[in-house]
Length: 156
Image 1 (cartoon, rainbow, N blue to C red):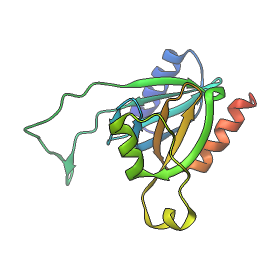
Image 2: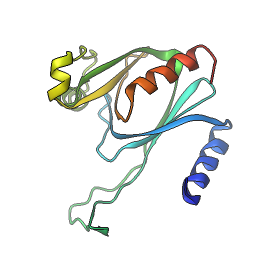
Image 3: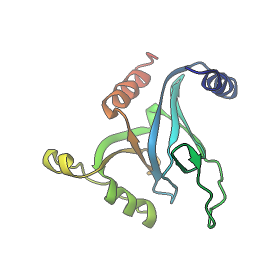
Image 4: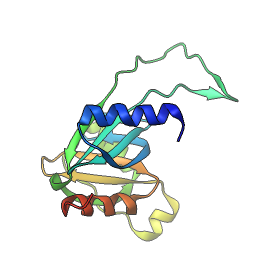
């Protein structure tokens, strides 16, 4: 881990007043409250909760930053939710998740079939007790599910 990453982790631990027990990145993120982040989020587990924060990622080509004329101003987004508030975790089609995000729908999506999952982009849908739906494109959704179980059992 490079120096910048170590400093970022230390800063987050101070902010959360807790050691981070697990961390990953989601390359795509959204909620049914109309929030969509194409550039991803930092996701970590601490104590009995999860914390996520998006980050501004400037487009590049061959290592050079591309300047956009119609650039939308970046507004940082972060949120915390308890593992115990997670009602379900499901793999769903990304295109359907985008529809839910844009329309701010309240109903969770159905699990995608195994054959469909082979040919369609999928994301992880997290349904909270509050009715909020969170969508992640995770490196390993199985690892995320394992961490959720560990947090719910108080083992992280």
